[in-house]
Image 1 (spheres, rainbow, N blue to C red):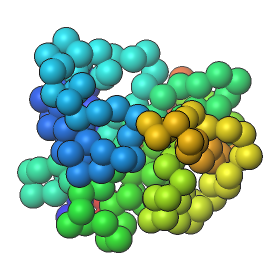
Image 2: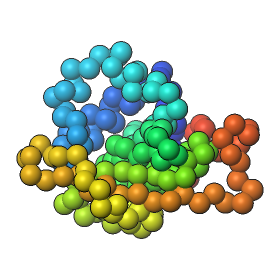
Image 3: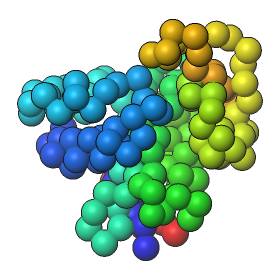
Image 4: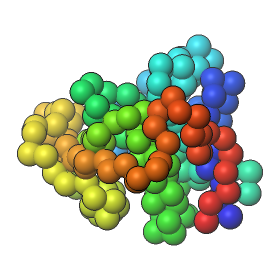
Length: 182
């Protein structure tokens, strides 16, 4: 069973381990490089977890991190999905769907009206996951990739609040701690 765990700054060792695993497994999928993050000490790892309003969730199975996703507050009601990764052994088993749903629920709780992301254009499995969750290409140019010729594919979706769902600041706190899913 996969359990989603929302990270706090004190979880920095777990965040470090899963982030390094993601960068080692899929260096082409992230703007960051493994060598840059390996040099980071506790202060750097905690800093990412203390971004005001950010949301970091890890998928845990049998006591180990098998996936991660982050939500960052954005401008104009558009939050951002970042750093989604699922370990190779669990891809295609719904872990990515669970992480996506958790970040979307977080964005709705913040009052966001849309969620956006950037993905490497050749990452067909990730693009399929995002499309399955209602994301579509925006047509806006993404950031350049290291090759200098290719740009990230920017995708977004409009968020729809379910009637009766709690809004940010109203006391509704689903997924604010470990919760079994699966």
